[in-house]
Amino acid sequence: MWLSWLLLAGGLVVLVAGAELLVRGASRLAAALGIAPLVIGLTIVAFGTSAPELAVSVQSALRGQADIALGNVVGSNIFNVLFILGLSALIVPLLVAQQLVRFDVPLMIGVSVLVWVLSLNGFVERWEGAVLFAGILLYTVFLIVQSRREQNKTSATEFEAEYALHEPVSWQRTVLNVGMAVGGLALLVLGARWFVDGAVGLARFLGLSELVIGLTIVAAGTSMPEVATSVVAALHGERDIAVGNVVGSNIFNILAVLGVAAIVAPGNGAPVANNMLVVDMPFMIAVAIACLPIFFTGHTISRWEGLLFLGYYVAYTIYLVLDAVNQPAIVQYREFMLLFVAPLTVITLLVSVGREIRRRRANVKADAVSLSGK
Image (cartoon, one colour):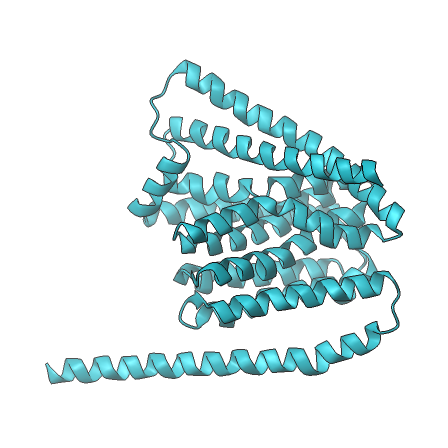
């Protein structure tokens, strides 16, 4: 058990270090090629935080451990929204850009539903993985085109300062940046191998399924870059970056991480456990849908909504533990969540949305009266 914990911890440290090196090296190389800082932030920086998920899921899929590969993606998406946004919102209420409400969150919901539908036959087949991966390419192109239309000087300055994009170009710096990027990739591969070995060993020792380990320990571990990015962004007042990082990472996890995992998996693709189809994927979809009304109300995530997110993550984790140990109380627990907590949450969100709609209508009327008075 101690060896498994050591591999798990060591792999996590190496994964985070590799992701940091990869992002910094690739960002500076892109800047040297004349790519705008905002484009770098929307693509390399945002997707770079999901590099550990990609490394771990691909490594697991190649070894035929589909439960860890898929559990990592689904669990990370649930963890990103409920834990990371919840924790960040408790620190300071988060701002939500209008583009997230109009495009990115609906896209996150859409791809979450799509991957569940594709999995209904018990597999995410190779050609389906290729379709998902094509989706991330199209999404990246859209981000680049969109960012060129809406250049944001404030965001560009933030990324220039954070990733030293103002440095003069020289062959020495280019060699250094290439070395950072290549070294980061090597660390990701090594860290992923250690992390997966540790997770599998721990699952066997504790008698837990690889799916549960993938949904909890592996998912939380590979999401550490997102935790660091969003929490630090919230503390520094960059509250829009905190939210955008999570939404972008979730889209990348489904389209790129799950897509590549299905492509490289042996056989016809990645098999999907029945429990994931019945419980975990629907919960991931519900969490994604819940973002829409919460983000819509005032375009902020308030502290009480952050607390709600954290509460649901604790409740979900308790469910996984009860299910893993075959605790009879899980039936009553599930009924309580479905028949009382979930409806109460839906009613609360609907009331909040109704208030926001009335507030906006009142503002429109006030503006109309003001204009007619003039």
